[in-house]
Image (tube, rainbow, N blue to C red; front, side):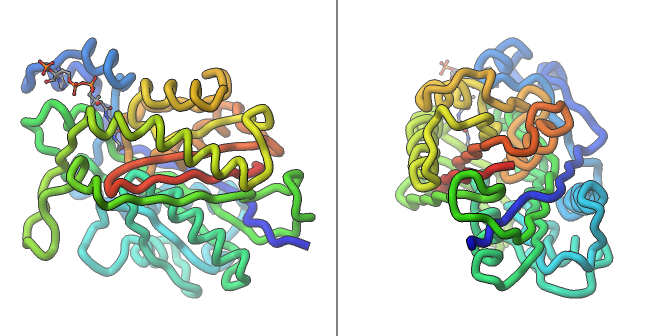
Length: 323
Ligand code: UT7
């Protein structure tokens, strides 16, 4: 018998304010056409003044609990992926724990920027497989609008705010690819590339800083590394592209999403795409896309899903699971 971490509920939340590309035309030398053509983004959501990452995460967490038909104390743990926590400490995860009324278990944040949700899923899977926890809420939540340099047209038009949450539960499997739940994980990072995507501030410098990115350089790494990590994870799960129902990629740029699908030999009919509506929400983008994919009726129980992401670090990885 094999213990598997199976998704039993999910939900997402987007802040009310929708910002279409055209809004940037007033303050920047940019256009709706350029943004759409180069990134696929049409709009994004921005958190209201005073609305924090843990607020967005709490909304998503409550929806996931309702979707699973569970109460807060049915959870053993919360693992929250973010690079934009409300405060230096405590973790955003403990803020969510208190906000949803969870009075037991443990909660902590994981920081791997845009790959954060993949790292958090991997961590939660390890906790479940090792028997340390039976039910874990995994959240990706971000307010990247707080770290934008609004004079940098190369970055500020690309990112958005949001949150998504999934609940993983320990279930018995037989140990082959017919099992529901997480079948394989692949994680990678290479700090040699830390200068092509970073925030130029932090606690030690006593500033918040702004996101800085050499977009072309990140792009250059993205397709190749995403296809490689997805392939490694599929191989370790014992599946091939032909077995995959959905790729649920990190939603940074439609051209990266298309390039990766092509390299994996899958048509865009097998890809969940939300980048046009959400922009790049960093660690929130995959759980948002999973939740939207379920809502749209695209993702169904039993489907084989490959999720993959890359971001600052560089850090990248993939998770293969059966829904
Ligand atoms: O989630 C973390 C991972 N991040 C990513 O995956 C992002 C990866 N990178 C990208 O998505 C793309 O590189 C961008 C969307 C950021 C940029 O697309 P690109 O096709 O690589 O454009 P570029 O940076 O080479 O810029 C082309 C031109 C430049 O002008 P010149 O030098 O050719 O005259 C830029 O200055 O476009 C200019 N440009 C803009 N023009 C209008 C850059 N930003 C804008 C803008 N509006 N917002």
